[in-house]
Length: 394
Image (cartoon, rainbow, N blue to C red; front, side, top):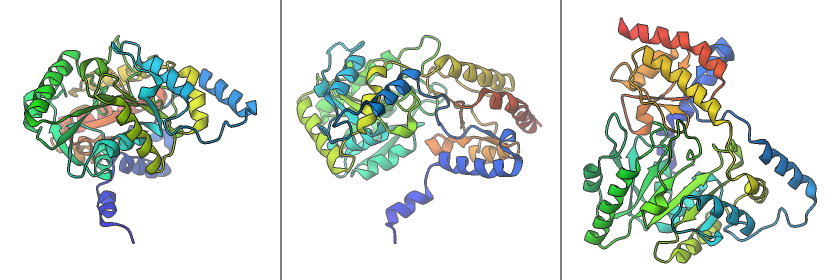
C-alpha cells in the first residue's frame, strides 16, 4: 500500500529515532531515573520569557487578521526583523525581500532544494552529516553525494571535495556548527573553499549554491564565532530556525536568507515563494512569525549548555575517550572504544547508556551524545560511563 521508496526509507530511517524508542523501552523496565538517554537533540530549556510574553499578548490581543493567509514569504514586519538580525556582520546588507519565513529549517531546506534542483543534479553533503539530508535531497529530484571530512578535525579536505565536483553539482550543504561534532568550519577554510568553487564553476560553466544550514549558530562556547557565509560565497543561502536558539523545536518556525550579491536574487525568492506554496507549506505559522519578531536575537541559557558540555567532556577525557571539545551546538562525538560503533552502542545499552552510532551520520567508529538533557542525569550517568570504559580496558 506504500511506495517502495518509502519502504526503503523506513528500513534505513534515522538511528536517532531508533535509539530514542529503545530508550523509552528501557525506561519502562528500569525507571526513567536509571536510564541515561543521550540519543535525541531535543532542546532542554524553555523559550526565553520575551517569547512567552509576546505569545500571550498576541493570543489575547483580538487583532483581526492575525490568523489569516499572508504573502507566501511571510509577514513583512517579521522579515524586516530577521533581515536586521542577519545583517549583523554582513558586508552587503539584506532587506526583507531577501528573507522568506519557513516551517522550520527542515521545511526551508526542502523548499530551497525543490527550487534549485533539476532531476539528477547533485548535492554534496559533508560527513559526518545530519542523516535527514539524504531524504530532503531525494524528495526534490536530487542525488546526494557524500564527501568524508578529515578524521580528527572533522573539516573537509578541499582536494577531496574538489574531486567530487562535476558538471552535475548544483549545491553543497554546509552545517556549521555541525551536528554531530559541534565543529565550526574556519573562515580561512571557507575562503579557500569559495575560491575552489569559483574555479569549478568556471570550468563547468555552472553555478553552485552554497547552502548554510545554521540552526545551531547561536549556541556557541568560549568566544567562538561562526564565519558569515554571505561575505564569503556569492551564491550563498542561509537556512536557519529558532528550534534551538529559542527552544521552539515543536513550533516549526525558521527562515531562508538569500544573498543579495548573487545574480537575480529576486528570481530565486519568487521561486522559493512558489515552492513554499506548492509543496503545501503555503506560509510559515502566522502566530509564531509574530511571536519571534522581537526575540530574533534572544537565546536560551547557553551557559547552562556549556556546563553540561564541560561536565561530560571532562569525564570522557579522564576515561581515555578521544573526543573534540565542541565549539557549538549541544553534541559530543567521541571515538568508540572499539572499531564497530554499532556494537559499542549495544554494549553501552547494557549500562543503560543510549548513544547514536556514528554510522547514522555517515561516519562509523564514533558515537553521538546529545547533552541537551537534565544536568542531574549527566551526574547520575558518570559511573555508568566509567563501567563502560573499564569493560573495554579489560
